[in-house]
Length: 95
Image (cartoon, rainbow, N blue to C red):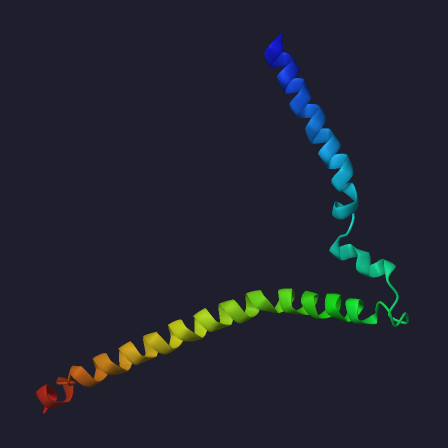
């Protein structure tokens, strides 16, 4: 019986904490639609949402482009170094 009351007390405390913190969780990125760009008090906040969304949308392309460019340059360097190290004897053997 004591274990049941302990578990019940933990659940009640967890629910109370969630009810108290619901005001903090109420703020979300989709609140941008509720703000007006014409309101000078919120204009910088709206602009911040705009740039943060652009930044988040651009990051996958920047990351993939960086790694792709690095891989391409590394492969090209490796191919050119192999081409310089091994002489092409096919022309000499045909003569």
